[in-house]
Structure formats: C-alpha cells, structure tokens
Image (cartoon, rainbow, N blue to C red; front, side):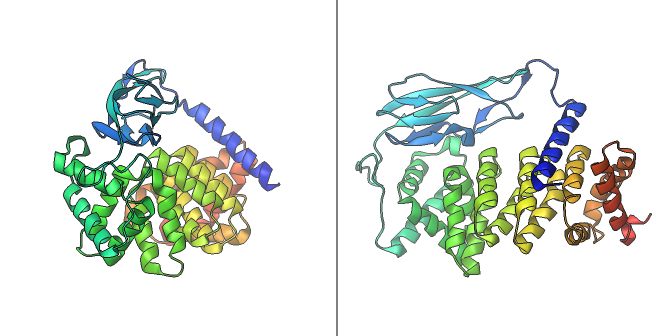
Length: 375
C-alpha cells in the first residue's frame, strides 16, 4: 500500500470514528464564556494583531467580529485587527458556533508609538540598542515589573514598561530574552521571560524557533529558545509548531517541536500533525520523539488510539519494534493509559477493518513481551 493511500485510509477511518462517536452536541445555546485576556490592546497605525491569541473560552467555538469605529481600525472575519488612524474603538467577538452563545469585547487603542519618555517615534520605527548591557537592563526591568501581573489591570507604570518592551526592535528583544534565559540569573528569570512571551509574543513563535536554529551547536542557547517556546498552548501556537514540524530542515528543531506538540493531549490537529510527521520523517532521533508523542496526544481516547494503531501498521518492522518499546517501562502514572490501550487493542481483534485488526494484533503481541502487560 502506498504512503498516500495509507494516510488516506487513516484519515477516512478518523472521520468514521468521529461520526460514530457523535461528536456534535445537541444541547442548544450552551454558554461558551468567551473572555479576552486583556482589557485593551495597543496597535500602531498599519500594524496588525490577531485577537484569537487573546480570546479564551470554555469551548472551542468560532466568532463573528465587529468594530465600533471602522475609521480607527478594521477587523477581519478571522479576527485580525489592523490599525488605521489614532483613536479608540471597541471590538466585539460574538460566538457564531451553532449551539453556543456568548460575546466578549476589548478596547483597541491606535496611535503612534512612543519612547519611554513619551516622545513619538513614528508608526513603523522601533528602538534599536547599541549598548547591549543597557538592552539587557531594560528588558530585565520590564520583565520584573510585569511578572505575575494581571495584563487586564496594569497600572500606568506597568503599561509604560510593557510599551517600552514592545517598542524594542523585535529581533533584539527576542535575542535579549534568550540571553536572559540562558544566563539563568536570577533563578526565576526563565519564568519571567516565559510569562511575558506567552502574553505578548504569540505572533513571533516562528521567530523564537529561529533562535533555536541559529544557536547552531550551542546547546545552552538552544535550550533557552526551547524554554521560550514551551509555554505556548493555544491553537495558533499549535499551527505554528505544526508548520515547523512539517517543513523545518533542522532535525533537532523537529525533535524538540514534537515534544511541544505532545502536550496537546486529545487534540485531533496535534495527532494529525504527528501522524503525518512520522510517515515522512527521515531522521531517526526526530522520528523517535514524534512517534512517542503520538501516545501522549492519543491519551486514553479509543478513537485516537485506533488512529495511532493504523499508523503503527504502516511502520517498518524495525520501527514497529521501536514503537512498542515506548510502553516498555512500568510507570504507575501511566497505568490507566496502559489499561485503555490494552482493552482497545483486544477489542480490535473483532474489528471488520483488516488493517486495524492486523495492526492491533501485532502491537498487542509486542506489548505482551513486557512483564506489566502479561496479566
């Protein structure tokens, strides 16, 4: 069976399993409780900001976006705001998903950026530092001021520090954050940088990943870039991670990104990304992390487990053996996961889908070689 046909079979069965499970809720008007994580957003004239990265809800839903003053800013159907002229406007996100309700609003402030002393610097100009020690000091001061603060309720001083950080040349800001994490002093500097990044730099995930690649063989800087990527958990972050996983030529980066994606347990998009990655991966180390991450993302969902089993069925005999070894150590924390996997594989012995039945039998036989699977 060709790789193309194999992937088509997996995706087709994915659809069948989801339809059989009845994933669409019949309950009408269930509150989605949308909420912006900030009360206001400052955007420069001509710049763009994706509201989805700052919009949270208790359910995965779609929205309609509307703005109170289209002369100040525009908002696209996808929720991307573009600054047009100085002023304030309110964007309202209304849940458009059938069966759900709710809306949330955020104030958009458009204006020319300013330096720390309030002087205008022009809509597209950023602050470039010649003194790297001063750059480090200014970034640290901003991080310490903003650490563990509610971004929806910043004081005037905190807003000033945030604006000053966001006006720094973006590449200098990112490398400055990387340097602070790499130095590790004070001990909480990584947490400060991570918190700032996840609140303000979601649009720069690919740029942060580039820090990893540009670090070359410097493992300290590589780990620092990876630590900056670690806290991103939104759908937008997953899309960025997926792009890196599928298209980056850096095997070390693919290896690390697979670990980040492994944290999206129960996410169908994350599972699909990893399935496709394992089918095309040419680097053995990267493949190992991608394949192991399949187990974490599938978790205890029988439908997801079956998709992984079908993928396992397409592996070479050598890779099948390697995959089975991911279950080889007896970890009490994974006891429930092991139990569900064994039950699913056993139930699949009655499957009318030959590919699923055969792959399940093969994996089940391999797992029973380990003592904790023999009972």
